[in-house]
Amino acid sequence: MNKKSIFRMMAVAAFAGIAVTSCDKSAPQVDSKSAAQTAPTELKIAYVEVDSIMTQYKFCKEYSLILQKKGQNIQTTLATKQQQLEAAGVNFQQKLQQNAYTREQAEAIQAGLQKQAADLDALNTRLSNEFQTETNKFNEALRDSIQHFLAKYNKDKKYSIILSKAGDNLLYADKAYDITNDVIAGLNKAYKPAPAKKEEKAAAKK
Image: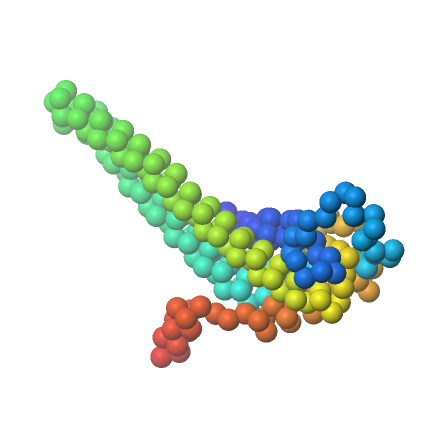
């Protein structure tokens, strides 16, 4: 599980579709008849670096650690159970070759091992789904926080479009249109850690 690629993918997903107009609505609806009348005569464009958001936005850094720890715990749990199952299988085969079991005992042990394998597959699926749910929760929260901030930020800036730049998805972008630092500073200023996180930090200092 590559942490860097996972979190970049999450960031791109969270940023996908974020485009802000000069009004303060995050998703304005304009009919085709009025579009030509209200469209600005000159586009004012800016962009934000996704990687910088992921590494410098406090919310991203805290949640990335949560997801990383959860992913590592899942891997450890599955690997431990897999090793236990493999060891039990090797032990069974050795004793089977030594004729240590009756036919009924061997069939019962084999059935038990098959059940353990099925249970492990089910656990793998459940934990993977839980991790995906947590990832989706992060994406939604990240997207909402950015859209909420940009809606306020753009009341004064009045950009026609704010793009996300991740890797080489933009072939060329003049640094003059880069508002990443402004956005990160604003996001961090507005970010308030959850009470639980504050308690954890206080406990860690003791």
